[in-house]
Image 1 (spheres, rainbow, N blue to C red):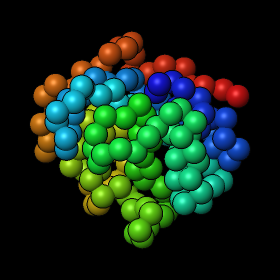
Image 2 (cartoon, rainbow, N blue to C red; image 1 turned 90 degrees about the vertical axis):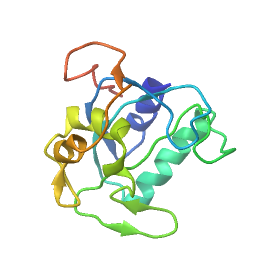
Image 3 (cartoon, one colour; image 1 turned 180 degrees about the vertical axis):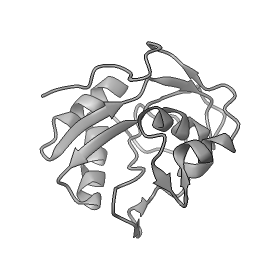
Length: 153
């Protein structure tokens, strides 16, 4: 499903995938009465605005069968916009940088593979990650830090 989501984004006009982390098996967060998740991070270059990028992510989720039933509950895919260079957004639809980014190791571990020096809230991804418990977060695919090939369209 992660590969399908990345391919859907790569097929969206105005989005080019530039980096992809490995996939990670991670314990559930929030509502913990569910199976473990798979997480990954991608870097993109886009001509879309932050809100148009969010719309593209939500459209990809819908095409892949995402149904929103309960907050932090089981789902087939969840695509979040974590950071958008040069943009700070805070409205009813979108908060950038993502409001929980620096609190979630399951997000920071894959993000650290592709953007360890990215500054968020006055610290790098690696500095934020250093403060968090990473237990249970394990790579599930190739051990090469650059991850899988980037999808092309």
